[in-house]
Image (cartoon, rainbow, N blue to C red; front, side):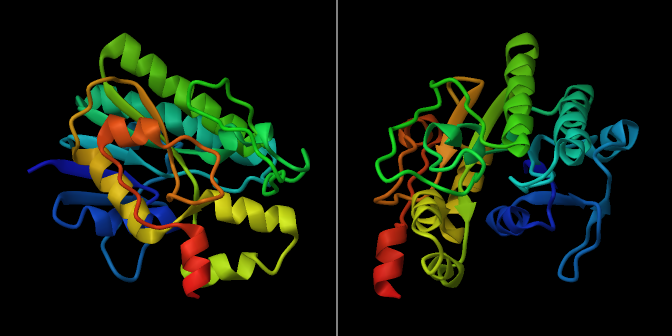
Length: 255
């Protein structure tokens, strides 16, 4: 059986990853404990311990990061850049076969931000964006994830490691999505465009871990099949079989 390590396993996306990979042998790694499952404690800034914890695993799902698009530079450098370097260092030291890296929609959202100082705003008529477009991060958080993608691309090309960069959208419950629609129009549009339902999140992570990958590194956008989305899903569909089932407009209509 494939042994999977999940960093950031106590976070929002981490919880979905744990559920998605329940039928695998998983090690849940985080800085703090969780009331529902056992956690191996690790600060991703500790490179030597990262190697020790990762030893014996086949796949690393690297979710650990400061996830705030409003974070200052000093708040993202250590967890998001140094921590990601340590993740790849440990993966190479331990002979891991695949790394699934949690990138973000914020690496390319400045193309369509309604307000350059507001990373959760969206213009009325956004232009399509594919993973082949040059990064245009909307925040220091986005910059840190551009760096993380670059690290993974380098390791894939230099060392042959299978790497998936998943540009994850905004994981929201149906109730939380509905709440965003009472806010400013540009923020409400952003939420509808970036919405990622919990079950689509689980499906993406499960497939990213288990699907055969013909081309590595592989960079894909992962949002639900939203009417308002502007990110291409073709790369995720063809690259690892992602099949989103939910749509923010339909969720809101049903609500």
